Amino acid sequence: MLDNKEGQAVPNVTFKTRVNNDWVDVTTQSLFENKTVVVFSLPGAFTPTCSSTHLPRYNELANVLANNGVDEIVCLSVNDTFVMNAWLSDQDAENITVIPDGNGEFSEGMGMLVDKQDIGFGKRSWRYSMLVKNGIIDKMFIEPNKPGDPFEVSDADTMLEYINCEAKAPVDVSLFSKVGCPHCTRAKDLLTSKGLVYEEIIIGSDASLLSLRAMTGQTTVPQVFIAGQHIGGADELETHFA
Image 1 (cartoon, one colour):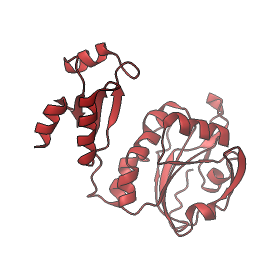
Image 2 (tube, one colour):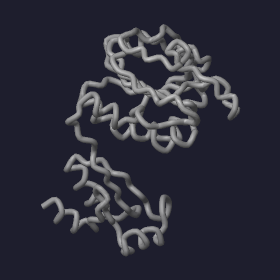
Image 3 (cartoon, helix red, strand yellow):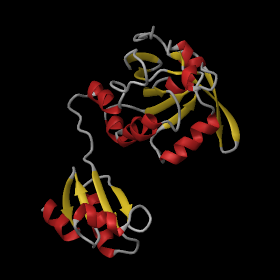
Image 4 (spheres, one colour):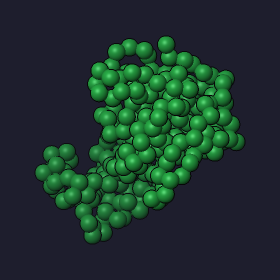
């Protein structure tokens, strides 16, 4: 049975973390005291859903969550600190604090430690998210207790809607570019001036010219997409905003 612990204090645990080649003890008090913290817990670093969706979306919505009173976003998993640090680096998720619950003490205290021996994982955390205010659990979103690894309610968008149902998620923006392209710089500066965060796809390293042509029908850069709409180059982007 998965426990909903809304209204209760988070478990009192000391996490063993590694920072700049030094061991650093992180307590639940230091994580949660006098702060509003979003926590999302997952079965394992580097696993498919965790890497493709769960962590990246929290990282994307970090600024919006911060604007709505969240001081920190914590990702927790029953992994050691070396694995968690390597995963954070691989994900380039600069807005997330990863916490290794290596012995499963926090997950057990939350009533979320589950047996995944059937897939060789041993004891792991069930997938859930929660909003913690000054160490007290305000809200929990626990994935349904059914086979596999359900991912239906612990996502970042559900959490944001709970915190502020009128908050707007950032618009998805992608930009194809080439190194040294002055028109690409102009487009990037324009997006930044409008307060838009964008994903830059560099031709030659992140994608090929064939990919650019297949997606846009063009062979020149920049090529900008906003909310799924192909805008075009820097001149078209200026017209779009005008």
